[in-house]
Image (cartoon, rainbow over all chains, first blue to last red; front, side):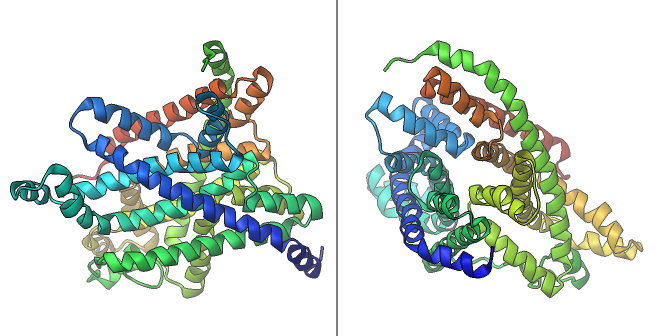
Length: 243
Length: 219
């Protein structure tokens, strides 16, 4: 197995990889959008004082967060025809990613809501705004800064989880790579290319999200340690202030 | 929609037996990840640029590549370069390697909880680097990291399900084997999901208990 043949094989199948690259990007994007929409009512239910609302939402979030994504995915794929109608593999993928994302986003939103001082909501109500008006016009804008950093983590996680869609034969990147590998037996080249493509995709998304985040987020610098001796043990890498 | 409760119930004993495999894999990977994480943390603290650069590059790749792909790399690529591993070993290796980098990040956070004065006091008492690490810094870092480590463990329990893709007979693969025979994927998968969720909720509860026991005295 030479380097040249590796590259040739990958170039020959570059169309398969390129179209495969669109699927994790596309399904993750749809999953993130669906998950975020679904997370809003979930988060509101989890924040509700009534146990009748809070209980089911909490149970759903706990199940979605504590079961492996692959189990949820296959469950959706086989469960959908029983509950609603038959879904194509990629549709099952979007639904499962959306549900999975909703659970994580609901926690992010709940945390962001709790980070806004309660007085803000109460002051808005006292000024005569209705509950939903206070929520949308006063509380929500202040939540953005707290949503952005964990939101980025969840988005990257979803892109990586989308590799699991290959298990129900969604023609995405990992699936394409496994097909090329079965055809060419160029194991090293195919998996090196696969890992590189995912790496570049997540780096790109992370950079993009980082720029959005920078617009909303004031980085709190951790206090530099005054003791050089302590810094030798208590800080990592070449920069003494973390990342 | 008809729910076949008997399919659900009859799947449970087999799944529980497979659960021992999944749990053993998760625990082994966790122990290895903590050892690897401690090692990475100490190496990063040396602040030796070439080493830090290598670790940073590896970390970037590990954080950016899906775990399933890392598992495939361990299972398919390592034999191609002459290292033949059993699927269980390759799987544990992939999960533990990936997790070690996440654990190192947890420990990095834990380091910020340790007052600088402790290290100075230890040095003033004549302790060497090994003693400062082994007796002062790391034991406390481990203790403050318990909640995050428990969370990491639940992530590892979920990660074991991916090993079904490389023929490890864990809960997920056993589930697939069961519904290949009984044609009841929905009920069988529901039982599997229940098992995973129970194990993780139990781990979280146990973690909260341990956390109270080992918490550093409030300062």
